[in-house]
Image 1 (tube, one colour):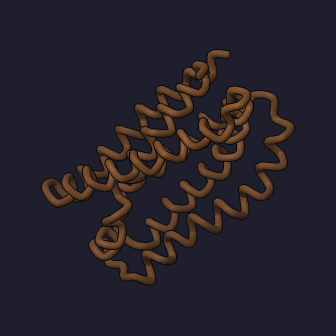
Image 2 (tube, helix red, strand yellow; image 1 turned 120 degrees about the horizontal axis):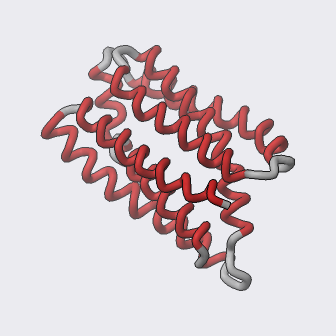
Length: 181
């Protein structure tokens, strides 16, 4: 496995860990800021719609971009901003706006990430190396869910969001190694 693959896996793991911290308790946070199940669903829909629509257009443009690594780093930067934004969310509308930031970050990052990852796969190991990423994503998200539930129950959501931002910031710093080419 080459250096680019290791960098992508490590940075991705840190971002997945950050996201996994909130995964099982997201609806509880939404309730805490004055929302209900409909607000939780609306916020998640805002993420999915913004990511889905932008992915459709951005991925076509990204085929023509020479340095896709910049797009990965840029998308992860937007995700860092989203994790930081959680700290300041006080109502469901602000949460929707943060989710849109995540949607934009996802739309910028994911197609470029997939392209770079695919380009760096070792011949004859395409399935196992994608399987490595998939396996890592589930395991890291599970670890994040356990840690996040524990941190939020002991210290509250603000501290949890600081952890999320911290992990994502470390992931962003790791991803800067992609720009050294």
